[in-house]
Image 1 (cartoon, one colour):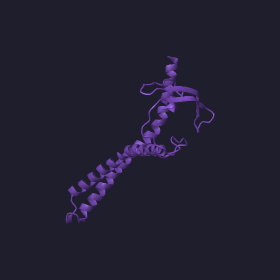
Image 2: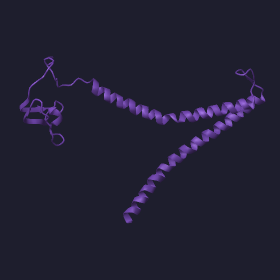
Image 3: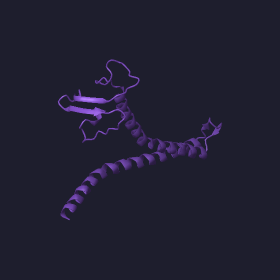
Length: 171
C-alpha cells in the first residue's frame, strides 16, 4: 500500500505539471475560436450594414452570406486542424521509406558471383569443407568456424541452431 500510494503521488505530480500547458493550450484554442466568432460577425454585420456589394452573386451582402462564409471558414479551419496527425504519419512513412530504399540501393561488399558466370542447371551435392566466414562489418566476430557439411542431391536438409549460429550465412 505504501509503494502504491507513493506511485500515485508521483503520477499525480506528473499530471499536474502536464495539465498546466494543456490547459493553457486549450484556453488559447477556445479564445481564438471565440475571437473568430466575434470578428466574423462584427465584420459581417459591417458588410450588411454598409450595403457592401457582393460581386459573386451580383448583389449586396445579406445575413445568409455572412453565415455561409462564417461556417465555411470554421469547417475549413477544423478540417485543417485534423490534418496534423495525418502529416505526422506521412512523415514517419517517408522516413521509413528512405531507410528501406537505402538498404535496397546499397551495393553489398560480399559478391555472390565474382566471375559473372551463370550456371543454368546445377546438379550434384553441395559440400562445405572447413568453411570460415566473417562479415566485413564485424571483423572481430567469426560467424562460421570450420563448418563441414554435405547436402546431398534430391534430399531435404534442415539447418537448425540458436540465433546467431550462422544458419542464414550458410544459406
